[in-house]
Amino acid sequence: MAKASNYALAYLLTWTTYGTWLRGDRRGYVGKSLAGGGSVVPARNEFGTPYDADDGRTLQWDANSLKSEPVRLSAEQALCVAEALGEGAGRSGYEIVRASVMQDHVHVVVLAHPDGKNEVFRRLKGISAVRLTQRFGRPPAKAGCLSSGRGTENKGGRWWTQDGSKREKRGEAAVAAAVEYVAAQEHKLAEIVDDCVVRTG
Image (cartoon, rainbow, N blue to C red):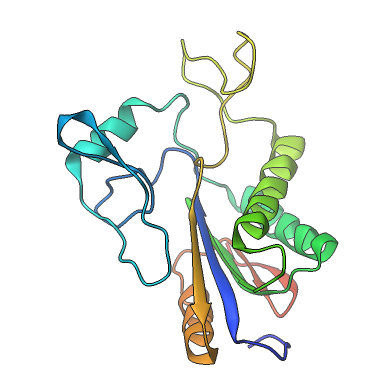
């Protein structure tokens, strides 16, 4: 494990690239679901709750709402994400224990911080999107779809899905298991290990 003295509580943060891991996916998801009759069921994202999975109605609903093509990170883009995570953590005083960046999703284990999991998530995910756009521009939007930003000009798509998973891991065993899970991810393109950014793809 990385150098730190308090592993009583950490956050396992996960987000996906736009359009590649939709709500309703058989692999599991954290997000709103579409129930019978068209009603929307709120996301289940609390400690100890199971993931939802394999919901065809919700999958089709989410696919129909896409406004840009699915995003899959290149090796250079993944490295940019890892570097941005390190930068964001350093600026905000967060300690990343382990992080892995794949073609279609990101996992980060970060020690608990007074900002709370939602703000830690927002800052790390946000700075990674900013750095990607500064270096590579915005992903292309679908023809005929407007940007998610204000105005009518098609300015491009988004790097990330709107939200993600923010799971609290309580106790050293749970934190260690989260770190092991992130470290064991297949097809990593970049990662953070002991505060060092490593290109693996």
